[in-house]
Amino acid sequence: MSAIIPSARTRFYPLIAIVLAAFIVLGFSRTYYLRFLSDLPPMKVVLQLHGLVFTAWLALFVAQTQLVAAHRVDLHMKLGVAGVLLSVAVVATSIMAMFVAAATPRINQLGLTPPQASIIPVVAIMQFVVLVTAGVALRRRASLHKRLMLLAAISVLSPASARLTALLGLREYMLLNQMSVIAVFVTCCLVYDWRKNRVVHPVFAIGGVVLVLLWPVRYAVARSEMWQPIGQWIAEVGRHLVP
Image (cartoon, rainbow, N blue to C red; front, side, top):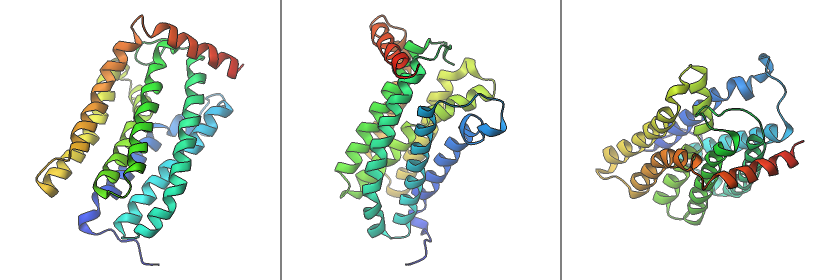
């Protein structure tokens, strides 16, 4: 097996994948990865399972970018099956975690009640499903596949971003920070495309803008009368799933 040494032309994707992973690990360091060092209460089993599955997906995402950069597309394609299975597991555990969160009595960092805040994971899960499904369907068109999968990883940054924002005592800027974090990573993608190809790929341009703009949209929907019965139903299901 050849050594995994990314070339200069392909180092963007493995590099940004590592940065994304580091950001997420940092965001969840206190509440998940290093929770045993804090005085926080034990996590519910559902949340532990979700964290484990998502960590596995994140590690595989980083490994896949490294393999492509090292021109080991053969291994990348073989591991793709595991990627699909892990993505399904991420969605399944995310849905369970969403129900649990909606049934937990607390005020969200955006000032939303748990039923109102349930719109946040609902949209996040939908984004992830659409991007990963499109990425898998277009796996033989590398220019589309790699950009869709990268946007899928960017789309799940919000929970880590929220925890970092709260840790820094910037809760009053939560919505702005959530949008800004997504915007920074999307901008990196756009700049890379422009510098490399002198044109911005529509997947990054359109998909990136949608990811950013969906934040104020979901915040508005969360406070609307339309979402209240849906959020209450999610919370009620959560109370039955986890006593």
